[in-house]
Length: 178
Image 1 (cartoon, rainbow, N blue to C red):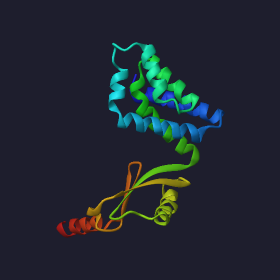
Image 2 (spheres, rainbow, N blue to C red):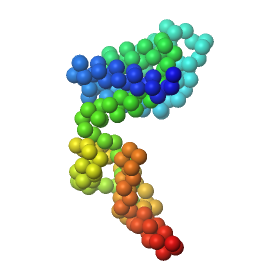
Image 3 (cartoon, one colour):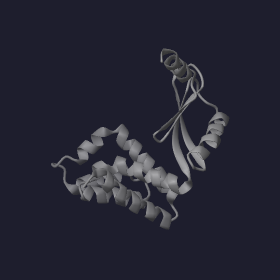
Image 4 (cartoon, rainbow, N blue to C red):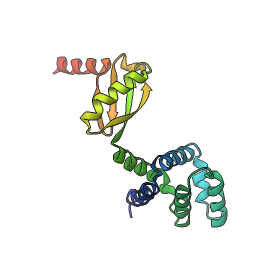
């Protein structure tokens, strides 16, 4: 079975538990922390896939490494470990965050700008573009890209809204050439 499908099933189950226990915010925070920890420590996944290490030792490592996360998250991690599917944790995290965002009416976005955007500017972008994508609000990550010269390029999912000076110059250039 496809890893993405499997991750989606586990994410959906964890999401249901989060809703039932009214811990959506806490579990999402924990899942984000787990995802970040695994991204920063790639050797940890390699260690857990080592066949020479017993399952009990692997469980002890997971319990120790993620002692601060909520019980549902820790149980999910241990279950994935038992079923030899710990490698899907990053995808599970993505799927869970997507489910949580959908439930809250939030979309993830990345704003590329020539300079860091202020909180007011980020809020203004969120107010305008959230409506365009049918969400209540946007959770925007700001990435500074000096090559944009000025303006903002906003990526929401697979959509890109380019209001940058460099983007406008490229469009003018294409019009002049054609």
